[in-house]
Image: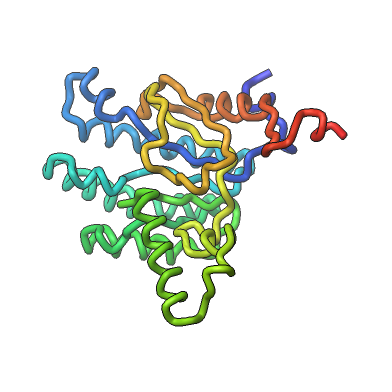
Length: 247
């Protein structure tokens, strides 16, 4: 029986988030520049999206570029932006063919204009697709997102359209980039690092975390299947006891 066949469709996570880490180290192992790793990571993105859609995962969020990544060498950042524009343009037709919708979260207006325009065009072209939603986290960090949410809430209080006593978890959820997206049930990070690096801090509160030593350019469908199987073998209690879940 293959790994894919072992997966229980009834216990499938509806939202998987992935920190795609290890492109630079992978390139260094090949004796190449860091951008070579990013270029080869595109195949891993394609395989992960295809695998998620084939299984029936409704949302797949990929941490593609953080706000902190702007501090990397200028040459690498520009090469990454060019790669992003090229990839989005090249993959839009495939997304439509596979009925996959594209969305993005983050400080999108900080992206170069050609990148932003290409992204918005792809989002518009795929907006009616219903099979799976691919969410790209671009120029994103969770602290940036939470600060923005607090500012919006503070403005409503200042304008007397919201009272501090009315603030709930739902209030905060409604002001996050992911307001229309369910919280991830499974978060995967590649490259052997065991941290979440300012990624979906609020939304990952009850997510199952899965870490693999695979560098991102080596990540394939079978690796996603392994992560899902590991998730399905865990007991998700949400603060309750095991006995409460059984009763």
